[in-house]
Image (cartoon, rainbow, N blue to C red; front, side):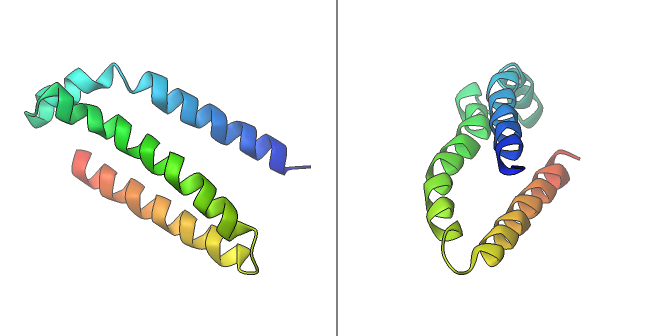
Length: 89
């Protein structure tokens, strides 16, 4: 069943982002000239969004429009990644 390895990979990515991003807070705070508390939100906000979006998308994904939910979610993630890379690049 390919779903289990995909879910394990997603869990691993979330764990890595949550743990490896912490040392970057001080460099982000210095580069963007913000307080460390404000820079902390660059890690906290995605984790909060993920915690809220997971049950909502799980509920929507079990409905009749499963494919549309997956494609819309993928489009939102890609757009967010592009926006973040344009801010940092």
